[in-house]
Length: 55
Image (cartoon, one colour):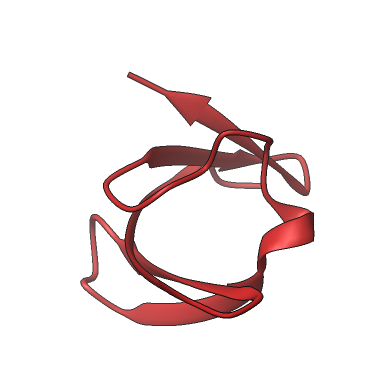
């Protein structure tokens, strides 16, 4: 499985909108599936079906 990088662009209620850094596609995902501490501007790495905060 390919590693993907996303940036959190907005949060609405219980959902975060994240943008794929490579393709620019935006998706939304439930906040409870993201690591604790995720906020607008957070950079995420998606690998092996898990999200991880990266610098």
